[in-house]
Image (cartoon, rainbow, N blue to C red; front, side):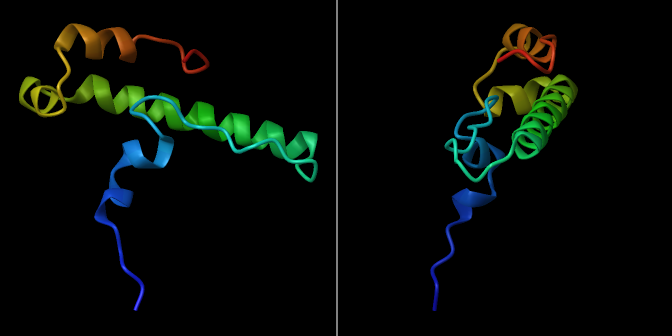
Amino acid sequence: MTEFNLSSLHPASWTGSLFHRQAAAPSASLSAGGRLVDRLLAWQDRATQRRQLAELDASLLADIGLSRAAADHEAGKAFWRL
């Protein structure tokens, strides 16, 4: 039986950090179109995460160790900025 790790369910584990999606290692087999799609998906992920972050209340922000000011700063960034 394969062991299941619950930490893989946390969005931070999907991206490598809370707000940054790690790009896949460059591959010779990845076409320009594939790289474009990967970039668009990363931007969409980042925009979604920032929109959700802006909606969190103070108690949820405290649970993840962020102040309202830090959350607002991150949520206010454009989706293409890290």
